Length: 460
Image (cartoon, rainbow, N blue to C red; front, side):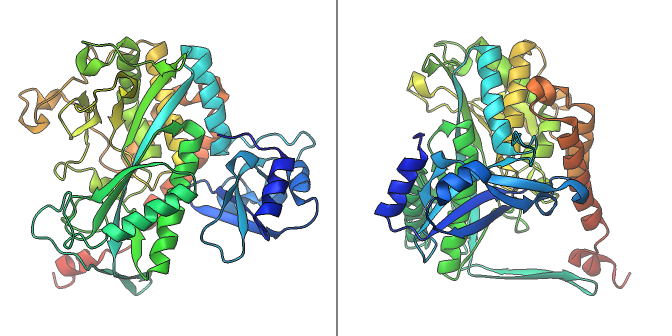
């Protein structure tokens, strides 16, 4: 990531005739917000020094009586926003408090990501963690939904309808390949490097775009930017994009698989030829930590009630707290097709895009660090490796599984959060706030009549 100075940013503003400065940040649950400022003389210096005040309680961060906070642009994230009519220079923001020292806000996910990378180096000696997200989403031609006292419904219309799994379907039957091409062009404008795209398994318009590896902070930014690009492009095309983990009954769910490895002295820190999956002891311990803390992690990687309608057996759902090379039901898969030692890695399959990407990835990294520190061996812990169908295993009753609901995940987090406190990265206040906000979602949905309940019980 290039290090930009205010002088370099001012030069960019002049060269590109920038009219608007836009500061972006996500709230606690991951929804994107922004504020726009017309360009004036000295605006960048002023923003770097003073920032822009905002109401943190409206972002779900803290109590109303103490909610004033400040957004300060991270100049290194400068990008021209391709979706604004006026020439707009966009930045992701640091969130700081209003004290004289402008103390970083301890619930700001971008701040947590920086601290987590520093902890990784301190504890393991590794330089960085590298992350490669896969974005799965559906494209619908029309969507209508509503929930109120006397109404609750959803209806989606889809231009595609395959009779079999649509994985890698070709045009003309894959009608959104041009959409994905255009999306990738926007990704490039936003600084996101695309590996490939294709039609996914879902027979009603499911897509996938996979991106190359970035460091922890950039990955969080890229996930937010990718969703921003796809939502905006869909709006331009009068289409509807959703990352909901399970938007349709009896259709494949949307995940956000995360490929992950570490580097040390610039070299892959997981590689050891001849070991299972060519993963060395460091990598195994890292995997062990993630699987051991998997139930608690799911409160951050799968933080919606809808997440657990995807995480059910079948549909290649990664429900088992196991690892292996060939089993897509395992939470962790080591890809078999890797030939380059520098790309030795594993894929954590449970996450979905309802996650706050900074909190989810930081929590995953901390779980892995805990595995390294405490030498959590996944083999001794009974997490695998498993390469066959887990449902057919004679020892299947001994396999541990992910929680079956958001409530179970939040309860797991309540009883297993010490690993998140290492290095003062997560705080108990943040964890308590997360559990409170997510429990409110659970309670709201639990008390709403479901349309299917009318079909089952209205005349009973």
